Structure formats: C-alpha cells, structure tokens
Length: 166
Image (cartoon, rainbow, N blue to C red; front, top):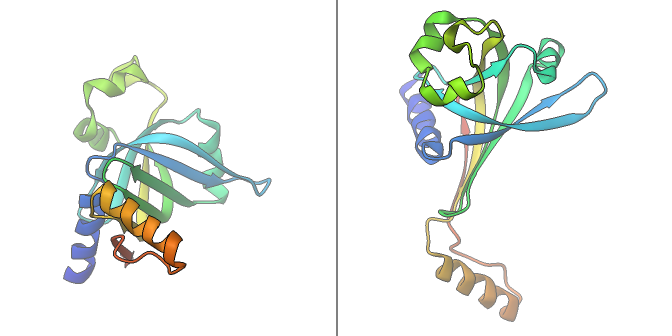
C-alpha cells in the first residue's frame, strides 16, 4: 500500500473512530440488499475492517457468493457520514479474535473466545466516501435557510471526499 493510500485510510479511520456501529449491507441470492448493525472492532494498517459475528448468522452464508459489501457509519452529533465498500470474508482466527476481544463481546458470545460460533468478518476496504459538515448546526441551518430563501444551493456545508484504498 502506498503512502498516499495509507494517508487516505487514516482519514477514513479518523472519521469513524468514535462511531462504533456500522450498518453492514450484503447482497443475497434473491438479489436483495439487507443490512444489520455490527460493531466495528478495528481498521488495521492493511486497509481491513474487522467485526465479530456468529458463523450461524444467515447473512454470512451470502458472503460466499456475494462478498461485496457496504458498511455505512453516521455520527449525527458531528454531522459526519461515511460509506465504505469492500470485500468481506468470514474467518475463524483465534489469534486475531484474542487481539480484538473485549468484555462487551461476551454479551453475544457467552462462551468467550471458545464459543464455537465465534467468527470474524474481515472487510478489505476498496473505497470510501465521506461527508463531514465540520461546522456548527447553527451555521448549517443558516446556510440551508439562506438557500431556501435565495433559491441557490447551500454552500460551505463541509467537506466531501472519495477515497480509493485498494
């Protein structure tokens, strides 16, 4: 991975650092998109996002035929929104699970690291898009109200970017 890609990956990681829950969207054999909330555990230096899941979760079977996924994050308090696309893989990796384990995960896996259905989802990030208002709610409201009155599109509502990682 080039330094440019590492810098872009760091940008995405920083924007979602405090947003623990992402909506993890998959595609099934019936051509339906489905989403569920998952807790992001890590974005590593290789551009991989990690989640705990159960190998019994029905959506994990869809990944065999349709590994392309989307994970979206929203921090409404700071007006930051991120959409990540990549390829997911279901893994049984005890070493990585130990590295990522925290006591809250035990709520879902009572057997702890020895739970027979404990699995990891590794998402190799390909690209991401973000919107970051970076301004106060009052400034955002002012810009939108001004646009409604003048008929011109709002300006200065923040930053929008696209990141290609892979």
